Length: 341
Image 1 (tube, rainbow, N blue to C red):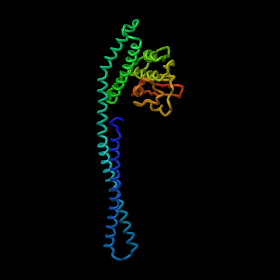
Image 2: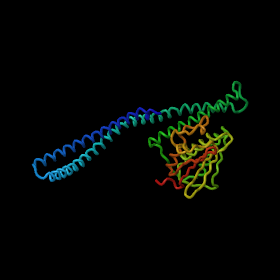
Image 3: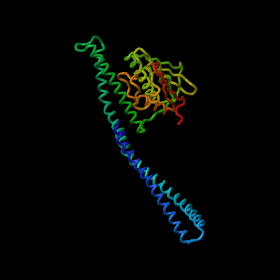
Image 4: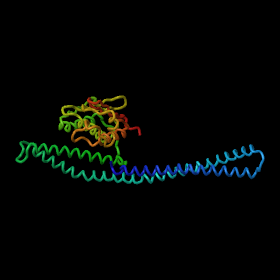
């Protein structure tokens, strides 16, 4: 668990709040008892002074009437004071308790953003080095000192660099989302072209793990108001997730269809499926379901969270359907006219 949300912080917060409300309850009991005692004593003294001797029943009725009337107004006033005091004190305590949590969370976000920025340059250099090494050895027989195993090692290193670069990009985007700095630019584009381009671009990744990626779209153009770059990113994250969780030799099917005034994109894999208990959480940040849904080099649990944010900013929804042993389908539904606001 991260330091910003460690158990010690919440334990201290819980202790403070319990102590606060315990003190409030004790104060209420003590003050109410004192008020009732003083009220009754004052009324008894007043009645005794005003009516020495006489009708005892009349004295009791007058005593009860005075006590009830005075006690009613005193308790009303006391309740008002207590409500205001408790509300103000509770607000002050809540702010004081949450201040270190906010500060630690802010520091954590800054660290993630700074670290992600620092990682981009060395990853870019490593990627270039791996590509050069692979390109120089791909034109023919392995040169002296370079075996097939070395080529495979270079390919594996290149894949890992690509995976790390994607994670860094996701972290950077999440930091911008949290800081409300991620902006979308909507335009009227051909949605079918975006889906085809994204799916075809992921075919290379599929080929590396022997997973085919197919795409089906309507014959004509599907015009929609979207942010093309962000939508491509959302689709890429969903397709990448499907590839990572598909066994070798299986396929990932990407389809686009029109349903009323909305476009529906479905990404279906033939993986092991997701348990019902995990299904509702797969779009949460850093959430990863059972290890059966993960292979070596799997995702970080960020891609689907980003896809959901992008879908919601488009005024759409994203959901998953799954059956254990029969694969998973992620459904993205987007209004053709763009977000209402």
